[in-house]
Length: 188
Image (cartoon, rainbow, N blue to C red; front, side, top):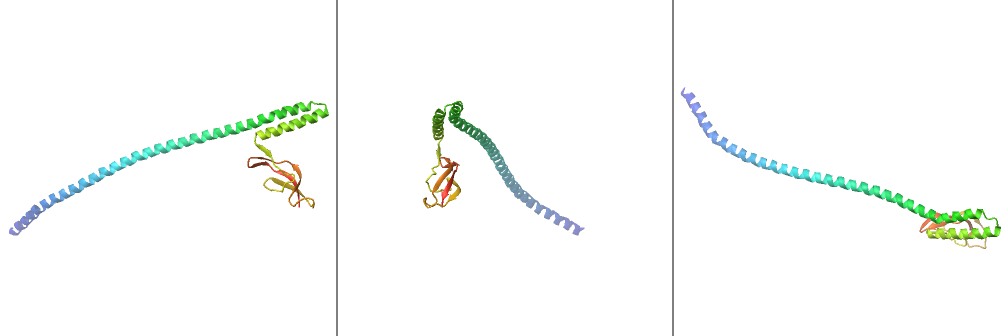
């Protein structure tokens, strides 16, 4: 039994010695747990801040998308309005010419009809000028594929090479844009 008592005493000594170590471990663990709790709280705060920033960004994005959609619709409406206004303005310039042609149909005097048609042509050219439309110069000019469309060639020494000798259909431009090419005959 003595040996058993000795073993029991050894166990008590080991237990007594390990209890302060257990307390120290617990303190270390508590300190570590406190640090972890602080880090978790910090991360939760960062997460909450990030969530707020995300919500703000989402709101900003939705507002921007709505603003762009409104801008797109407004631009489309303005574009349609501009086209309609331009079309109406052009027709307003041409309607007097139509009125004069209607009057010319009722004319029975050939000389008066010829004079009236000349005035109508002058009025029509003035209307085109108001709209910024100009006739392409062709007769006697050198052929330019940017403005002229050649449908015939003629070999004639009286003309320079590439010179336009006949105009079959007049061409027109508005600014830098060709509305219709002049259809011409060109000398070789």
